[in-house]
Length: 427
Image 1: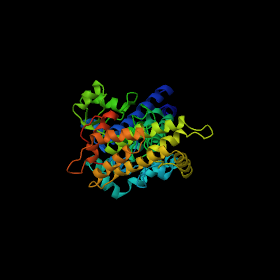
Image 2: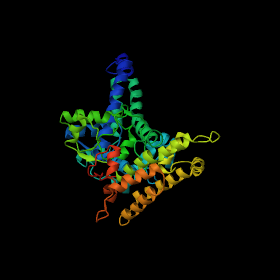
Image 3: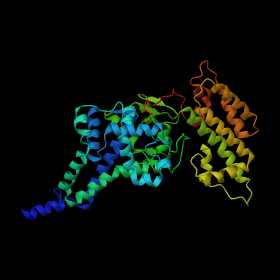
Image 4: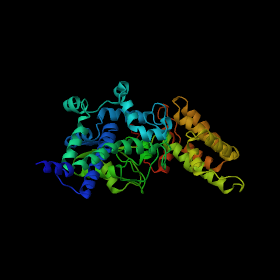
């Protein structure tokens, strides 16, 4: 009897080998990733997809079992992040708390934010509030991981505790560290959002598509995170499969002109989500005006002048907002030595201020003044950009929505269909 207990403690009920234990770990951790990206993120936070009630409750149970995260708290923290991305009010910005601290203490930062009752009241609306949520999942959120520990021990013996420990670290590392940290620190950007979000890599296959973080910040209300041909969102692939089984209904999706037939079928029953006017305009300005000017300056540069690093070139997209003091000085010195580029940067700063202005009563007039000044600048790329805006600019009697009506050409040049703007209620 004692020997049997020792064997069970060592190998568990399954007597599984290393290969089977690794397979179990990969399957369960990916289920946890899908729970976070599909249910907590895309469905509950941004309302971009609905799931069948049975599947929804499975996600709720799995989140309780494997993460101890409460739906309302996770949703509220993430909505506040979108509303205040990379500002002092952001619960987890690497530019505020530091990238190293976020990688080490991401869970602690999340825990501190979720205990803010004001945050929960403002951003936590619309999440589940049934009997099991009020009596089990919320007040006893730690029971889930505790139960999982006993299950792991029973199935795999002592080795099961190692599996359990990895499961407990999985979301804190990949979500708090990689997505919230690296996703705002390093990577490539398709769109010039007001924050510092970046796509960590174009193939979102390990953390359910969350790797495409800049795309998500550009289209927060979209169920699909990939927008370019070379990008792949595993979470969207799963949503499509669930949709075909009648277990998911896509509510909103980013509309791309070159969408393939599968996307067209999904869009048929979904509302289109387009880029915010500011993102459209500033993205096109960087691609069509700033970068051509930078490349021209680099081709003409004096061999004795040190080249501008790619990091500093990219910083011109937001005026060097996120640079350190020393980096900003180097960039300013490089730009100041090039009058044409300095002029372009000044126009970019003025345009950004207009796009962010809340004085809608003066936006149209100020925008026309900016267009006339840009056309008179004598800089070809800047003139072309201004003319493309001015040629399509409409002056509505009501100034509300002027940014959208003023730039229909921007929709075409970015490849984003000119569909009505769909805003996320919660961000």
